[in-house]
Length: 134
Image (cartoon, rainbow, N blue to C red; front, side, top):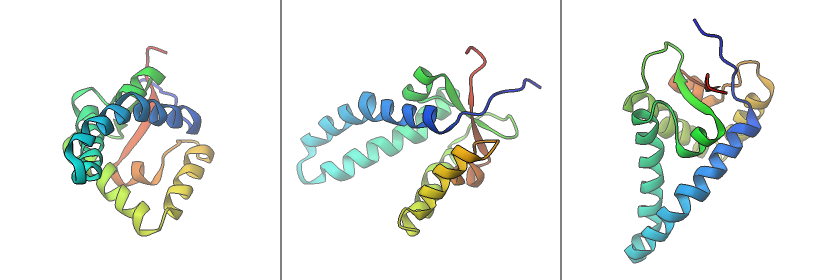
């Protein structure tokens, strides 16, 4: 088994910001075409990006690839749609129902825990690690 370094708060935040700039802005611009549905289309586009790209791109999003980190399952199986649904949808619902309190707790967990896992990582059985090429 290869020992991998867990990705901490700042590198994960950097990846999210890069995804927002590189992917989020173009999706938002495309969504503008849909008029009154632009918010729904924009959110759906970003949701599908976060759901599908890591499954088909070995745990990477564009931002994560640039930052040299990737999502992995704890059992070393490939990511699946189900895993990413748990991570995004169920994790997002937890954050929403707690009015963002769970999101703050997750950020503290990533910053303070040795394994750097957030609540959505526990829900989905995932971890974010630095790839072996760095």
